[in-house]
Image 1 (cartoon, rainbow, N blue to C red):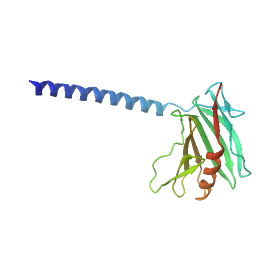
Image 2 (image 1 turned 120 degrees about the vertical axis):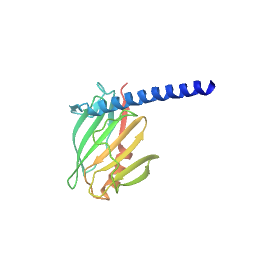
Image 3 (image 1 turned 180 degrees about the vertical axis):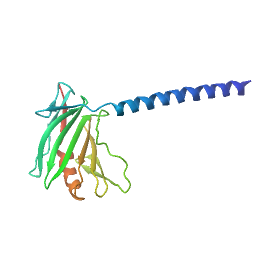
Image 4 (image 1 turned 135 degrees about the vertical axis):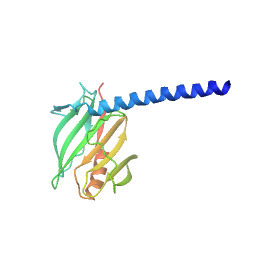
Length: 172
């Protein structure tokens, strides 16, 4: 009798878990399938919509800051032109809210390295001939820097500048 009750409970829990996982999977698929909405800004102050601003960005003659965007109402995106001619995008959002169409996929042959800059761990992922991704978190914000097909040493140099200099602040 006890075995039968335990078996029924096990089967019932298995069915409930399967239904819950299916619902989560559908919700994730719907989120990924929804179109990405970009809103252009003149400055990196997204206080009205996203509730924060990019308070500091790296400055260098190698970086040409082009445009500021808000992605899906909560992720800031800054477009750069990097000398000698590569494009880069910096994404920033409150921790856990980063919504980035350029999120890195696990690419075969990609190298991963962790570097610490100003007591912040940053993860650099790069495969030869592919985009480089640099991810880090600081002071309640997540960041992702995407470099389009950089030279292998270029990503490491930009990693230090961005991790050291980029700061975000919540709106008051």
